Length: 103
Image (cartoon, rainbow, N blue to C red; front, side, top):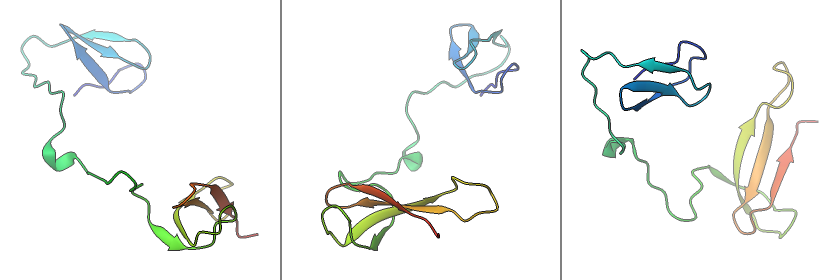
């Protein structure tokens, strides 16, 4: 794995060059180095989910749109670092999204 000297992004191998997909910087590969290039992830790196599984935890809360009592949730820092995070919900039925602040 190589990283761009200009912007620090991971570079991709193409023929005899390393090419940065972010800034376009090109660097020649070391001809004496051994490289292993794969297109597939290792089986241990793949996490399978069902068709309706978002990977987010669920909780009991009422959807303001359809009245369903289950929603996926996540938290995100959207204000200053010294303020609390905002909770976001996604209805498991209608996929309506809403947020809950501590105010």
